[in-house]
Image (cartoon, rainbow, N blue to C red):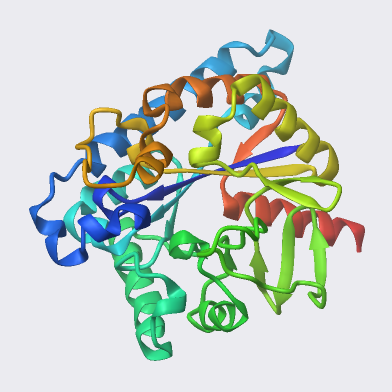
Length: 308
């Protein structure tokens, strides 16, 4: 069975790194808060897609219908959780996994070791208080992870990280060498005892890595071509990890007119098409299991146990 990991980075439109010069953190409390509405839009979209997949099952597959229940991982920013604790509880109530996206959306590489340690611990505790369950996963803002950051995530008692993006041409994405990791199963990399990395999925063509994990690339690349790339990744790795943001489902969000044409294009392109493109992607791979990160890790561990 092939797996697709749907992951949502829960942050608002004014917290995006590309728009930071015009939305510094000191001004966030002045901005229009839209993350609650846009996240509910994502939750409703996933519910509708789950129902659609269930209805497509033939009667003889009914006993196994729960395999078509879509479960995603929502990496929630601590700043959002403080202002919208009910949103965190709603994510959990809808059957999805709550994980940490840090507290303040600062790049891990820009924080001191002590500040990063505090950020990791506080965001985890805050989310656990909100949803009433242990938070197992973490995703660094803008995928700003490296070996040192991974060690601190591990020491902060997370079970997994999902921050590594192998597309090396983006200057904010971190670099990690996993060649000496203990084992690789599917896309899960055991990089420390009891601690795993779940990297974002990219397309490899020869020696080139093409960004295929989601975000603006998902909105920009035509659906038929994106599906072909995902199929190739699944055939190679057996699993595919996609990331999106609630603001990508919010075409009515305020525009930052001061941003350059390039930054504006990257942020606003095809916002009105995100939901439809996600629907096409899910229906194109209805034969897969759509699982949270923790569900996928559990499946990997169960396979390892059965082999031994």
